[in-house]
View 1 (cartoon, helix red, strand yellow):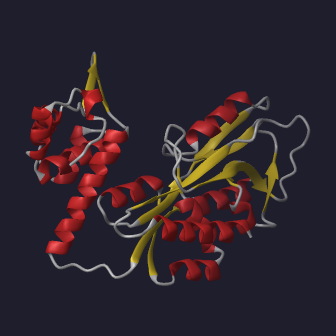
View 2 (view 1 turned 180 degrees about the horizontal axis):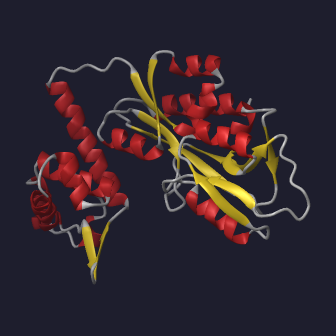
View 3 (view 1 turned 45 degrees about the vertical axis):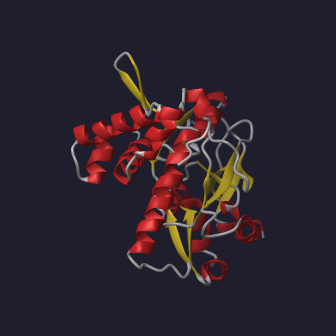
Length: 297
């Protein structure tokens, strides 16, 4: 197991020996805490007590020399960096080994696409069929996809990247467009704009909040909805405004129109994550190119 950049974290020969003593269970506990950003929630997911998980975290920190939790006063924060990525990779490898030893075979590529893309493919069935051919598709929110990916349940994931995440090797930038119903004509000097946003933190949040803070026209949030198709119905029925990736405009042409009340254009990065043991970089690139061709035509 190589958790990378050992010297930066005070690694010694004893630390390397300690890492070799870490059990699968310890790594699984650490993975859950990193994924959930909470010891309590990780314990609930694993079906054990919080103290049991805390013991494994302490064991990991002792043997590896890497701090998983940092404490500042009464605040406990969980790291999120290359160490986290390394732990996820190790845990995914463990899951793959367990699957192989149990005789489970995976004959098809398991691909996860975010719900933004899912909403697009809902109205482009032929393109969806082309993407699904010979593959098992999972459509879910990015957080769910990352959980499945980290557990080795998905071979490749296409999802938006959060503003504080590094660029992916395979990546595409998509403009964030603000839209309203095509027949919504706002009168000069009308009241605040009715805005519909997402209820949970997403890759949108940073960019949308920045736009709303800069805009000169007053606005009010009238609903928070995570489902993109439900949000579309709200836009059409209530004549309100919502941010979407620009490619969704092609999925609802004629029903909505883009507006420019919201200041500078922001861009959302979509990236590809894949397990190299299941799919090569070149094959991942070809699959991503197919998706980009679909949403850009």
